[in-house]
Length: 257
Image (tube, rainbow, N blue to C red; front, side, top):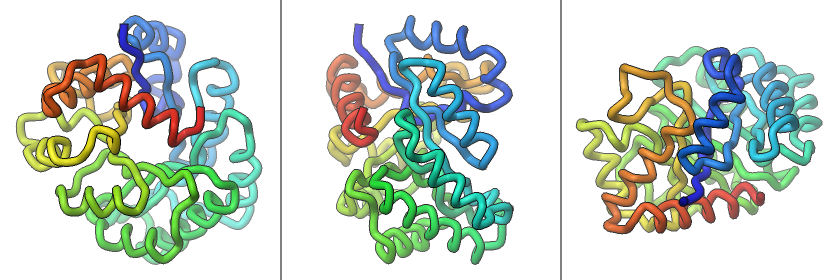
């Protein structure tokens, strides 16, 4: 059986945390034997580390999502630096900008994004970037601050092919999630067809973004990343084993596991 790496799952979300053992068993049954548990604020950063510490094939990220930028203090950044040196922490994330919901003021989002990019560079770990309705500003800040040597991933990619190529030129991966299976995701389908499979990572963003055919019927979980891999294989004209092997190698290279 192929092995798959769900590079972005919120096992620390209350909808999943209650059944982690069952979720991991179902993932393993589908060949998903590596999972990155991604944080979005300070409590979830702590819980991601705790979960990764408990399960051999789970790794953690730490960081504060733009929605929560307004809650970040100097003490938060100090704690993130301490959490990030844990041996199971593989990235800073998810961090970035969200100008769709604007749950934190935009100037604060930018300031916190820059601070976390600096920390990631200082500690030499990759970044998991969230960017929604903020594509130009996200790239501007990345180009200003630079990236860690390990680069990073543009999580749940939603921009066009030209943007994807710019992201890849900067040394980042394209994160592909459940929307690639949706009927109205022509732009993302075009991106996957156009970019090298060596630049793609697969993810669920569980418990959100459930892929077809389970969209609207089930909470998303890491086992369903296989459906994303199958769609990528179809679009790239390769078999599932090849898609799994390449995307897993990509993830292991970026996360250094």
